Length: 535
Image 1 (cartoon, rainbow, N blue to C red):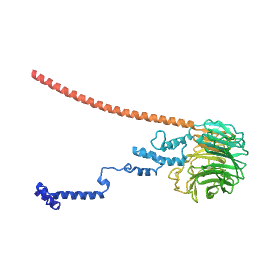
Image 2 (tube, one colour):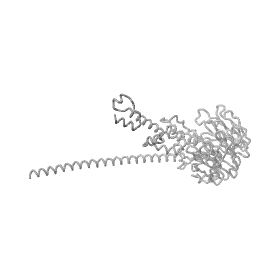
Image 3 (cartoon, rainbow, N blue to C red):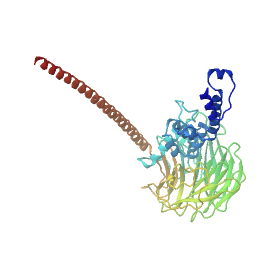
């Protein structure tokens, strides 16, 4: 008892008059003291940081909720996501399933031609990451080997070419006023229309509609025929309402474009007309100050070139959002647009190519020049863009291939939707990554898609640059690299096992030697004892 009383006095605790405690010889005051001490420790631990409570525990990003990690990964671009996926299995899974892959894929190339993945983990569907990596891999083939297919059939110069990748078809026309349809894979002529009259300067198509415009101011259209393997019957179908002609322009039609709801046509009568696809009625007339050379619609806006100026219009209201005055010295002949609609590419009579960034699409848009190239010695008649390649055709008989990824990053993502960090961007950039030449003068039209570049010009032939050979070579190189890496890993594994086996062998040999050494000592000791006994 005295010992317990001493403890209670030391902790300044009140004595408890519990008879069981007294009988047991243990003061209950000590229990009160320990409980109070425990309460005070618990209260103080709430105020301490986690590292003070668990000094040996290291926190990491994987300890956060998966939803929060996904939000953090949304701020990264594909290259950074690839780096993060190599850190751990958890981050690899979250980075591979992240929606950034889908967003960036659709920003660069739109929806894929194959059906979109239903979910992650399906054996017969590709994830968005796999689709992105495959498409990015295919884009590198335009720096590799190629073969050229020459298509003969036109009797005069070819003024326009259009590549419909989803159906693997090529449409061409020109001074002979005949629209021809070719197979993209074999390069064979499939069908041709009757002479439409005048020069056909523009052709546009999707899987539902084909339109062509000529110097007589009309738009000739063909609707897709159900069950026909090549979609359109250019020679005339027996089914009604599969062919039509629109008359409202008062001058030659120079450019055509389609979207899901509308038809866009530009003409030398200084107007761009917006047509409804179902009723085939003109909805809006966008009037310019000079001849219209090119147009490029996106969503509710449409960009156009007129004279030396570039316009961006609101297609619904018909009001101009912005105008780039004197974009080129002389006429601005060609126009292309990124899939997001935020970047414009223009080619002019001065042989220059400009890249502009559009910021804002509602009521007013600001446009800033991002880059300038001068790859040609003559006017740039045609431009085509498929991320990351910008292709230009010129009167000097050359094609230039420009990789826009070589530009400084002006937004959060390459060709993204965010506002540029700087309004005044240095426009002195490196020359094109590749030039294709050795042909006749005056290349009037060019298009790009899949592994092909299609071009037509004054020679009256259509050329197809086929880069599928480079794709196959690149795949073989990647397969060989994978085999070499696998063999290297196997060799390292075998070396580790062999070094481990040598160590165990050395240990067993040392143990045997020690055992033999003990036996020899025993033998010598026995021999010594026997000699002593004999003596």
